[in-house]
Image (cartoon, rainbow, N blue to C red; front, side, top):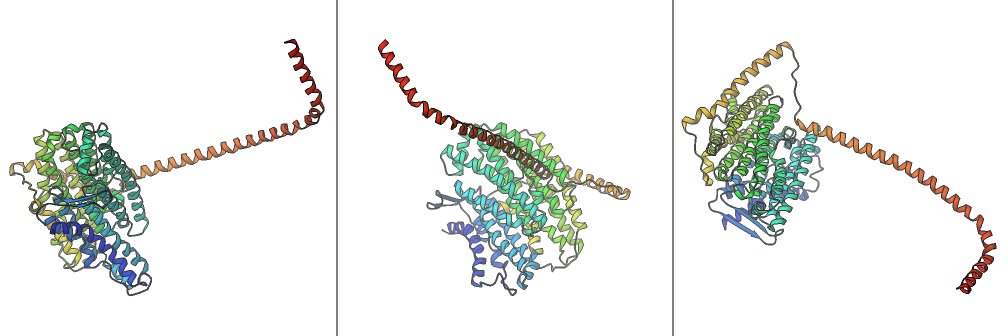
Length: 600
């Protein structure tokens, strides 16, 4: 009963907190318009939205809730496969919510003091933050397809409000890119789900996976769903919204966007693709997925190291890390026998990346508004999650060993080499992000016991110790033996060496006053935008041509119509003569008929 109650509260509690804000404003009808004072929106209740989900993840045992009156019949459940995802997602959402209360304190004070524009923007954030969380939790706990898609769609579209919170030109550009790509992905996901569910005649995700494995068009169904969820997962070519949306969102929103919501695409793959099913026949798709995953892992590193905004660098790092995870999913499609062991590594890698990237994004806000801590303590704490993401220590080292050992056992040594090269790129990206944070650092302005520093410190601790506390929910992850450390750590050494050469070269470039070429964040987005403008111009020219051709055709038809009317009017001249000759003609016709009968 307690587990079922927590399962209900995990979804219901964020929705109740979302409604709490409007109800307070309705009770104080002039609160939105009066100059001052105004209610505090981001209070402790607001930050408690993920607590029931966190308690559910830690509660022992499995539970299933059947909702016959919900959509087409709801099935929500917590099992051992869902528990690790729920735990690290709820934890990061909770830490980001606490961090947001300190990060947005200036906006809260301005809103309470009477700034109407700031208050309305803060109302939007207070509403959409728990709604986005509710959608995220629903897609993790749903077993029925309608609930799963509802959670995915709610999370996707509610997060748009988090991206455009700043309400400036860059925020609207990032929001536009996010929304366009989200609509494209939603269309593919919805089409794939309807096709596969209708073919299999099922309403559950388990039945959907089995149906795709047995369907004659299973390859096309799986490809459609892989592409649709790939938008959220940042697959190369579909990733363009990440480096545009992450830098403009508030820092706590960037943390959950990159740490949690980007994993919804991965959860979608694991939920609908028949991974580990040898009879599915998806080897061709698996080869494509591996190639595109490696292209994203390596290409994003090249684009990221030339960015200037720290959050843009971290966004490209997310694309690179998700490229590695994409390649692992591709291996699961290629060789079903490897998936049972590889799936454990994927969960650890995803949790490690989520918590560590959340700590890194929160650290950007800390470097902009440093707490009153000495630099010798503050900056090593900022470096710690970066080293973990490179795979040099803590959860990064454990997750790297987990998937490399599974790949070695399957005979994929070449793929391990490519992933190691991607890890070199991760080291370069982390160095670049810290370098930019150092150049854009602020002054010590906030107390070290505030909400921001404490949430950030706890996120670092949680990320570093993840292999120790994640087994609480039933997963076990081995640490690498000492003999494997050189093979795991050489990419970090190569990355640090290249960083040193890059810093030396940058000083030389600065001395010679050369212009350093830099691509804008979004890379392919600008190509897509240019192609869209050309396509729009071509369609407009085609429409103008049709209109011109239509105008000419109408003129010719009008001219012919006039000539026809003149000809018809001319026929009236023969009417009088016809009337005069009508009687003789009729008599003549009658005579001819009589003559014919007589001759017959």
